Length: 256
Image (tube, rainbow, N blue to C red; front, top):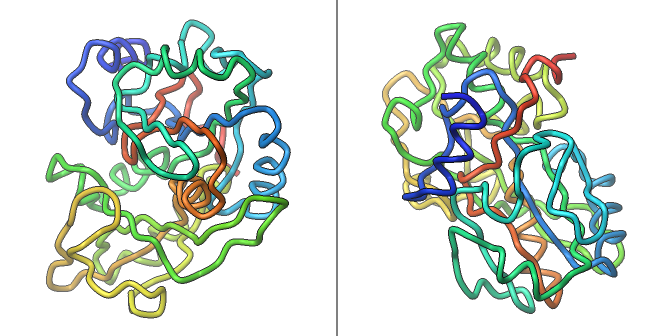
C-alpha cells in the first residue's frame, strides 16, 4: 500500500490502526489547537522532545502539510478525536465540520514510533501488535512532562514485548531515529513508570509479554492528548491513538 492508498483508505473507512501500512513511509501523530494555544504547545513540545518531536507545523487555518501535499488533514486520518475543555466528546472519521468551528487552528505533526517498526522487523525483531493485527498498547505514566505556559501533563509510553536477547539491538535500531521518539525510555519493571497492569493499557489494545520477552517502553506521541486532558484548552482535534497520518516522506529521512 502506498501512502496515497493509505490516505484513501482512511477516507473510505472503516477506521483501523495504521501500524504496518505504507511500509517505508513516515507516520505522524496530530494535534490541532486554536492559534492562541499554539505557542504554549510549541514550547511544550520543544521542552519535551522525546514524546513530542515536531515534524511540521501548519499555518493557522491550513489543513495542508508539506509532508503530503495532496493530503487533507481534515479527512485523511482514519479516526479523529474531538476535545472540548479537555474532555473527549466524540470520535469521527471526518473532522471537516469540527475544523470549521475554529478557522485559526494550528496543526502539529509529531513523530511516531510506527516509523521505526519496519527497521525492527527487517532485523528479525518481532513487533507483537503488527503480528497480532491489533493496536499498540499505550500507557499513561506517573512521570510529569516539563510544563510550558498553560500546557502540562504526564508522559505516555508505548510498549512492545522484545526478546530479552534482542533488547539492546532494538534500542540501537530505534535510537537511530531520534525524530520519531528514538531509543526506549524504559526497559522492564513497568511499576517504575507507575503502570500497574500491562494487560490494561490506557490506550490501544493489550499485548501479552511472552516467556523470554521483556516489556520495552518508548515515548509516545499520545502525550499531547494527556496534556490536553490536564491543561483543558477550549478546543482541540487529535488523531485517535494508533490511527496515524501517513505521509509521503520516506522513513530513511529521520535516520541519524
